[in-house]
Image 1 (cartoon, rainbow, N blue to C red):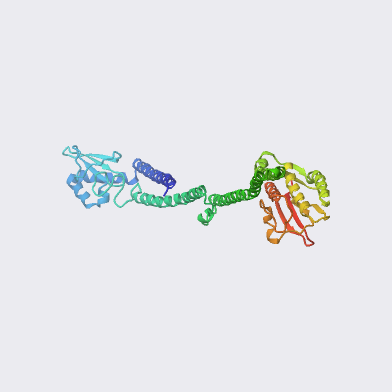
Image 2 (tube, rainbow, N blue to C red; image 1 turned 60 degrees about the horizontal axis):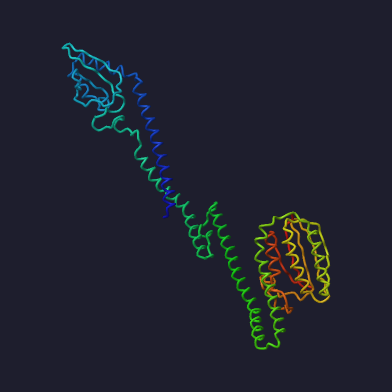
Length: 437
């Protein structure tokens, strides 16, 4: 059991103990008030009892009254006291410790003996054997001791159950946090919490989602480092080879310097694309989104893409353009669309057009870019969005496979989705779907 369990347990138990003793004190005070009221209130038979006892004392003397008292029942006898001038009780009983005595009579006999007849409140007087002050034999105690003990034991049990119910999920969360801190991302906090249906269970499910997201990010980062090192290894090897050849063949120094320049340019381009991919998250948080018409977004893009398409012996066609507005960061979204369109221009067949369509739905808009190239194998339709991926059918030089990866990151940052399908007539279609503003 952790410290939180004991803190919760003590707080809950002290609260229940206070409640039990508070309720007991209320009942005890109520009993005292009722007893005091009974003392102050004179019963109609009090005068009759005192008058009869005084008459017996006058007629038969102290001995006759003693005999009558001894013949009475113990419960009735104990309520009537007869005191002489020396404060000795007629039957030798102990005097009461309470001061609240009900009506009394004073009787003086012919031998000048003086007696006082006193009536006690209901219940035996304090000091009478077999009884407790304030209540008669067989009567319930004004302070319910046994119910209080039972309530304390029950509160002890339920306090422990409630403290465990509250502290267990927090303990499990602490263990899950420690697992994540050690790099163990496969946590299942929601299943450990069982069938709970409260905010703590919701927190457990959110934590599981967070752990899975961290796992994906870490794995993606590790894969990116691996791919970057793999991509850099080839140009570095060629650079070293060119340097060695330049030393061995100084007459071809100009040729090897050109080779070194080309390889360094490729490395510079690769590093630039990697940095652009790494800066996406920072740029997404720095630039606020704004309401942007899709036609305005495509206007400049189509102009630049048409120029590049003509240089590659193809063309760009806008087949459909529905009016729509999205909440987006113009620079980032333009970069994503540009990467998709340039990828289509690069892979379309010679003379085959690249088609662009804007299709508006009830709550989202889809921008579809289609080419007339060979497409990609079905098992590669999802992996083409991974960094440094190159299709088996891609025989064209250039590029590092980062364009579609950057497009996916940007689209997901805009709460959208991107997917690729092979067209029945041939070619690949990449669709970007974004929520409407």
